[in-house]
Amino acid sequence: MQNGTYSKTLQDFSEMWYGVFQWALVSSLVVHIPASLLSLYTLRRHKYARFIPVAVLLMSILGPVCGGMLTSAAIAGVYKAAGKGMVYLEALILGIGQTFCVVVISFLRVLATL
Image (cartoon, rainbow, N blue to C red; front, side, top):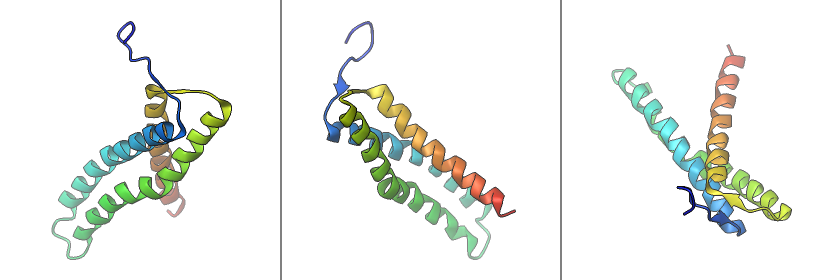
């Protein structure tokens, strides 16, 4: 601990991969849980659409597990190949950035169909 900051860097591939993946999963849950609660509230009286929040919650876990693992491994591989260590804040920003990209692409894909 120096100057109020934690100075340990992630040097190993598995540490970097897990750090980025962990933040991608957590940020995905932070985005999808309120969305599923909102859709559950608004669709509670619909006969079939009230089950859509279950799909939203499944995607909050399946998305990072399937795609997030691969992109986190790619990011960690680039850092490892460059011989650069990763600070925890970088892992946080890269993980949240993955979720942000997924949300932006999801909105743009829906807008393209309108």
